[in-house]
Length: 452
Image 1 (cartoon, one colour):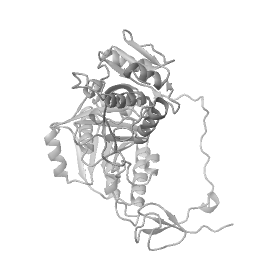
Image 2 (image 1 turned 90 degrees about the vertical axis):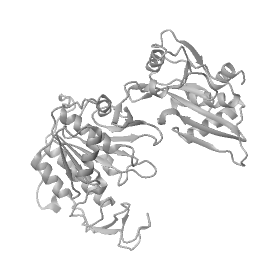
Image 3 (image 1 turned 90 degrees about the horizontal axis):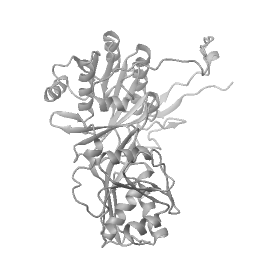
Image 4 (image 1 turned 60 degrees about the horizontal axis):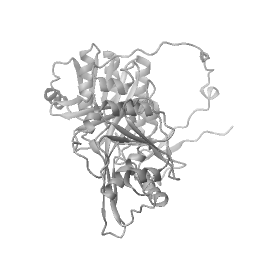
């Protein structure tokens, strides 16, 4: 039988090495490689026989997990209907975007609805958290507050208090005395997250963990943390906008990609019940380069404005600046317009933006992006009462997208009178709207801009 040998792992990036060395080849960090004990190879290595686990079949019926409402409709929507006991939730977002404000307001709302809530801060002193609570008008909420970074002490406190909800802000500040690494390192984050998730499942306590993000927008630390938790939420937004988007990218108890929309005010975050009306505010007169996209975020239809500006470039390589959209997909649309429709953008700077700070990722936005680009290039305004959606293939054909009925229904509710959509789309739900069905991008260009 082969002998298990110890492995050497970088505490900064998690890379595994066969032997110890001073510098990690993967991330370049010095003195970050530590030895990890070998894993056992099953019951024989443990010296005892394991117990048999109970098995069930797929037809076994179980009642859905009970949920506790927070009283914040946008938060409950993203969680899938409320807080599930014994769930582990990871919340990430850019620095200063409002994560601590959101969670403090959430804890106060849950506590006011009868749940016992603990808020443990590892980044701020208790007095600083109380100052924020005073500014938000939450000082009368029965939330227990603590400031600690030692995970052993935190788990002991949680075991004694037995709250319904515990908020840990943040996982990068926690340290476990059994791991020889600095707080925030891969080893510490992985071990601390494992202990918290295990405690949540064992004691039936819902745990919310705050995670820092990298410059690429991903949660810092090992990816295994996102696999361990039940729900991963991202708090998004631009510093220059007052709107904030809470997006679920993973949820074992509800739909993924669901969003909740908030507005940052002087008194904290307030809910936005109708985000479509908010994102479309200020569109009083038609302007070239503006197109309204009827999108779907999770289960909710949301209308957003896509803005484009096309101007002659003085550079050898024209600029392509994209905010709120996938830059690679925008480049593909520009190539299709030139190859299939004969409309070049050579020598032109292109600027694209999604109004309100929302990020649009679904391919259904292709037609609205193309419409905004052509409108800006030809200096022809798209009718202000028109919405556009549809996916553009590399051949220039327009492909139908899902939930057409919900998109049209939301547009009709907001007063839009016409829509440009791909052919063969299911058009129920847009009562009273004039529908323009297009088979390909060439037909769209010819009808809307008299070219093609």
